[in-house]
Image (cartoon, rainbow, N blue to C red; front, side):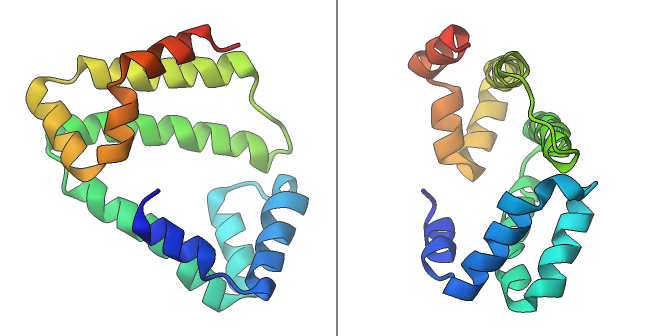
Length: 145
């Protein structure tokens, strides 16, 4: 787990955890978009919102450092993730087959990158690149569902 994420998770107060539980566990289905979720968190706890969306900014910074090929791959992966996030905002859950398909697309997209594209992606996202490039992980994804 990246140190920044670990610091975030261990640094949450009981009140911040309660806000996260309320927004993300109990009421997520009532929000229609990422922006509505973000606004709900900001309304309940501006301090939590500042902490919660800092890792997102960090990811954006990492993505901005990618070259064109790796950035196009990252954008496609992020688009799939947002599409599945939208399910939860409508109170639904993607099927196992849909999640598997998304993971297969992520792995296949990574495998299709040139050596330079893979190196670029790995430089910014080393843990994720390790999974995406792993034959063992690919077999697990194929066998899932």
